[in-house]
Length: 129
Image (cartoon, rainbow, N blue to C red; front, side, top):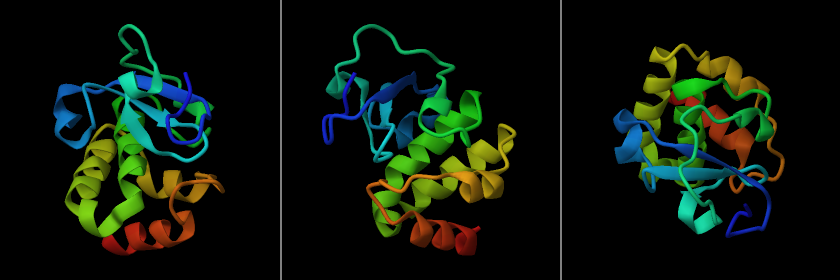
Protein backbone atom coordinates (compact mmCIF):
# COMPACT_ATOMS: atom_id res chain seq x y z
CA UNK A 1 0.00 0.00 0.00
CA UNK A 2 1.91 3.07 -1.18
CA UNK A 3 1.30 6.72 -0.41
CA UNK A 4 -0.07 8.37 -3.57
CA UNK A 5 2.22 11.39 -2.97
CA UNK A 6 5.59 9.77 -2.26
CA UNK A 7 5.22 5.99 -2.71
CA UNK A 8 6.15 5.30 0.95
CA UNK A 9 4.24 2.72 2.95
CA UNK A 10 0.98 3.70 4.62
CA UNK A 11 -0.99 2.48 7.61
CA UNK A 12 -4.69 2.24 6.89
CA UNK A 13 -7.42 2.59 9.49
CA UNK A 14 -11.17 2.79 9.84
CA UNK A 15 -12.20 6.23 11.07
CA UNK A 16 -14.49 6.14 14.13
CA UNK A 17 -17.84 7.87 13.61
CA UNK A 18 -16.95 10.60 16.11
CA UNK A 19 -13.95 11.63 13.97
CA UNK A 20 -15.38 11.33 10.46
CA UNK A 21 -15.97 15.04 9.99
CA UNK A 22 -12.18 15.50 10.34
CA UNK A 23 -11.20 12.68 7.96
CA UNK A 24 -10.88 12.52 4.19
CA UNK A 25 -13.05 9.35 4.13
CA UNK A 26 -14.54 6.66 6.38
CA UNK A 27 -11.35 4.68 5.82
CA UNK A 28 -8.07 6.62 5.75
CA UNK A 29 -4.35 5.96 5.52
CA UNK A 30 -1.38 7.84 6.94
CA UNK A 31 1.97 7.94 5.14
CA UNK A 32 4.76 6.50 7.27
CA UNK A 33 7.24 9.07 5.92
CA UNK A 34 5.42 12.36 5.23
CA UNK A 35 2.51 12.00 7.73
CA UNK A 36 -0.02 12.90 5.05
CA UNK A 37 -3.48 11.40 5.46
CA UNK A 38 -5.46 10.31 2.41
CA UNK A 39 -8.55 8.22 1.76
CA UNK A 40 -7.53 4.57 2.04
CA UNK A 41 -8.81 3.96 -1.48
CA UNK A 42 -6.27 6.48 -2.86
CA UNK A 43 -3.50 4.45 -1.23
CA UNK A 44 -4.71 1.26 -2.88
CA UNK A 45 -6.10 -0.28 0.30
CA UNK A 46 -8.48 -3.11 -0.52
CA UNK A 47 -11.11 -4.27 1.92
CA UNK A 48 -11.98 -2.78 5.26
CA UNK A 49 -9.09 -1.32 7.28
CA UNK A 50 -8.85 -2.12 10.96
CA UNK A 51 -10.36 0.04 13.68
CA UNK A 52 -7.23 -0.59 15.80
CA UNK A 53 -4.27 -0.05 13.47
CA UNK A 54 -0.63 -0.48 14.44
CA UNK A 55 0.41 3.16 14.12
CA UNK A 56 3.80 2.37 15.63
CA UNK A 57 4.82 1.62 12.04
CA UNK A 58 4.52 5.39 11.49
CA UNK A 59 6.27 6.29 14.74
CA UNK A 60 6.49 4.54 18.12
CA UNK A 61 5.10 7.70 19.76
CA UNK A 62 1.59 6.99 18.43
CA UNK A 63 -0.81 5.65 21.04
CA UNK A 64 -3.17 2.83 20.17
CA UNK A 65 -6.91 2.94 19.59
CA UNK A 66 -8.99 6.04 18.96
CA UNK A 67 -6.35 8.29 20.50
CA UNK A 68 -3.84 7.18 17.88
CA UNK A 69 -6.34 7.58 15.06
CA UNK A 70 -7.22 11.10 16.25
CA UNK A 71 -3.53 12.03 16.34
CA UNK A 72 -2.93 10.47 12.91
CA UNK A 73 -5.77 12.58 11.49
CA UNK A 74 -4.32 15.60 13.29
CA UNK A 75 -0.94 15.03 11.64
CA UNK A 76 -2.69 15.02 8.30
CA UNK A 77 -4.07 18.47 9.05
CA UNK A 78 -0.76 20.05 10.12
CA UNK A 79 0.33 21.08 6.62
CA UNK A 80 -1.97 24.05 7.06
CA UNK A 81 -2.38 24.88 10.73
CA UNK A 82 -4.21 28.14 9.97
CA UNK A 83 -6.82 26.54 7.73
CA UNK A 84 -7.30 23.45 9.89
CA UNK A 85 -6.99 24.90 13.39
CA UNK A 86 -10.56 24.09 14.48
CA UNK A 87 -10.25 20.49 13.30
CA UNK A 88 -6.78 20.12 14.85
CA UNK A 89 -8.05 21.34 18.21
CA UNK A 90 -11.04 18.97 18.07
CA UNK A 91 -8.80 16.01 17.19
CA UNK A 92 -6.38 16.83 19.99
CA UNK A 93 -9.27 17.12 22.44
CA UNK A 94 -10.59 13.74 21.31
CA UNK A 95 -7.14 12.16 21.68
CA UNK A 96 -6.85 13.53 25.23
CA UNK A 97 -10.30 12.25 26.18
CA UNK A 98 -9.29 8.85 24.77
CA UNK A 99 -6.30 8.79 27.14
CA UNK A 100 -3.42 10.18 25.08
CA UNK A 101 -0.81 12.49 26.55
CA UNK A 102 -0.67 14.87 23.59
CA UNK A 103 2.29 16.87 24.92
CA UNK A 104 4.33 13.67 25.33
CA UNK A 105 3.27 12.53 21.85
CA UNK A 106 4.34 15.83 20.31
CA UNK A 107 7.64 15.71 22.15
CA UNK A 108 8.46 12.16 21.03
CA UNK A 109 7.17 12.31 17.46
CA UNK A 110 10.13 12.02 15.13
CA UNK A 111 9.25 12.80 11.52
CA UNK A 112 12.17 14.47 9.78
CA UNK A 113 10.52 13.96 6.39
CA UNK A 114 7.06 15.20 7.36
CA UNK A 115 5.20 17.24 4.76
CA UNK A 116 5.32 20.14 7.24
CA UNK A 117 7.90 21.67 9.54
CA UNK A 118 7.36 19.52 12.62
CA UNK A 119 9.26 21.82 14.99
CA UNK A 120 7.21 24.87 13.96
CA UNK A 121 3.93 22.97 14.16
CA UNK A 122 4.88 21.49 17.53
CA UNK A 123 5.56 24.99 18.88
CA UNK A 124 2.30 26.30 17.41
CA UNK A 125 0.34 23.42 18.93
CA UNK A 126 1.89 23.88 22.34
CA UNK A 127 1.08 27.60 22.19
CA UNK A 128 -2.50 26.86 21.09
CA UNK A 129 -3.06 24.30 23.84
